[in-house]
Amino acid sequence: MRAFLAGVAAGFPVMLGYLPIALAFGISATGVGMSLLESVLFSALIFAGASQFALLSLLAAGTPPGVASTAALALNLRHILYGPLVAQRLGRAGLSSTAIIAFGLTDEVFATALARLERVPGEARTLWLLGLEAGAYLTWVGGTLMGAAGGEALLSLSPDLAPVLSFALPALFLALLLPLLQGGAVLAAAAGGGVALIMHLHGQTAAGILGAGAAGVLISLLRRWRSGV
Amino acid sequence: MSEVLAAVLIVAAGTYLMRLLPLCLSLYRRAPRAAPGGTLSLAGPALLASFLVVSLVPAQQQLAVSELMRRLLSLLVVLIVQKKWSNIGAAVLAGMLAYALQLAAA
Image (tube, rainbow over all chains, first blue to last red; front, side):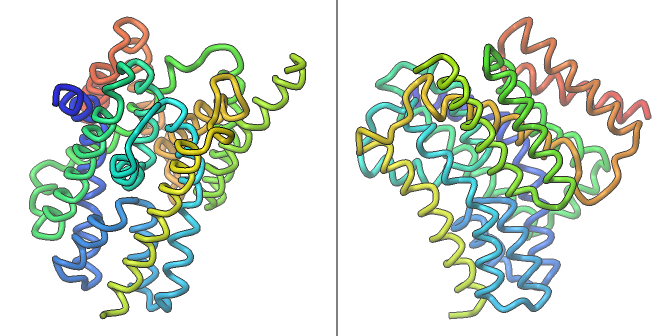
């Protein structure tokens, strides 16, 4: 239980970052005519921000559901990269735990696990990761519910609240990246960031993230080849 | 079943499988699991850097110089706090505080 709560606590920055985005999603969903239940189902079942927004906007624009689903799924292809990296740090996990862990592997959960899981004692890692995911998931679904039920009123309390909460995500990613920046990781981070930025500015964010992962793999391979491993 | 619910279920199932299958393959089969220092070792930092730039720079709108400076200064605070205390939560909160103070002063 202690490991689970430690995971929840480790996910606090993720929760801070999720709240405004989930609120915005709830507001957008009801804004385009989704019911409260439909809005919450998006977040409760998919749990992937970018593809939720994409699916919502495509459906609202009258795109056939099959095409909208395919486009939203294409945005999530990057998630294929996360499993092997988390598995490397996770050690042993039961089948039911693995099934739950997989559901919660969002970008932010993956990033936090990548940077912090190795510092958690081996036998506690599964519970720690489940705690991290539980906090993130409840914030995401709860934020969507609040947004759908009246988030505009909440955000109007202060115009600075949403941008300040949103800044939690870049702050989190930098704080997670810094301890990893040693040796070849500096070059990999520069290459990954560069590839992602160029693609992002050309409207290809998801492909850019995949490209960043590919750049990291390529640099790993080049370093192994040069060192003769 | 409504078309909206069908689309949500398709994306939910597809996303889940994209997360589940590589994790299961890596956990329960010996060969593909990424080893420390192996092929995937530098994919992590590259992915984190990509998350950072994507969350920092808006894709669809021009970022004003003043806003860019505000974000970069706040990230500098994150860097300093993380380097000094190695505490991710404190670094994130300090960065958010720096950003909030700059917004309030603007």
